[in-house]
Image 1: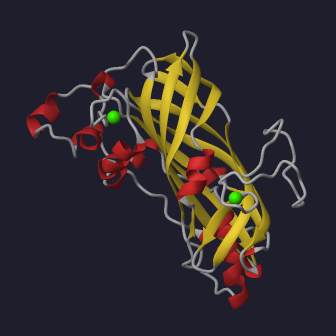
Image 2: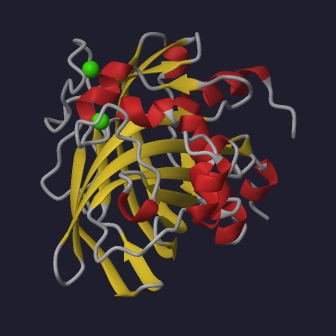
Length: 308
Ligand SMILES: [Ca+2]
Ligand SMILES: [Ca+2]
């Protein structure tokens, strides 16, 4: 990686904090997971014999609870071009209509941003709770198992700003914009993002994502994440965190994997406490089973963000 001048380091802090998107070409879908058996049986209580006997079956609809792991690449242009990943874990409750229309409620259980030059931006819990859950109503599933394709509705993640037409309207560009509001209720405009140990940025963000994929197993969908993020820094706790920077979407390196987690059709069942629903606590308790040993993280590659 190219060396950055010291003043660039702080610029990076800010960008990292703000950037919630992704940059490059993921391997083919099957490459992200090991075999189905190892994924869904590995950490469960069933013994090896049960695992081998376990069969997955296609359901008549996607209804139920799913976990989606999203790896979205964004290119950050600060002197040189750097790649940053937003790796988010969503818990999604799906209702499917007879024609395949999908209503999906998205809870963000985790939002992790990769560090930029060793500085990591963090999403405070107050921010996360103020934004989610979100609902999309324009998703769709088409085709007949096992040849089914999925598209999500536009997942509109608006932080600290309201819009009449979120897909179309321009982002605020001045602190006086009346669409900005103290969404996380901390007394500061917009939402507050922690930028390493350096400072807090008070900002607004719009992230629009469409997930397009195909079912590769009765309990699994994989595909691409088409995502664009825009940010507006309203203010900051220190001047160094108040500068805005250019970021670029990078769909070629943005990917998602999604698994059913409600036990239907032989899928893993994360409803540990038996209350007929899956929550983020249960998802996070099973986090290692779901992804760490089976999912290939797309590694940062700053060269993938270079502009020839
Ligand atoms: Ca605020
Ligand atoms: Ca439960």
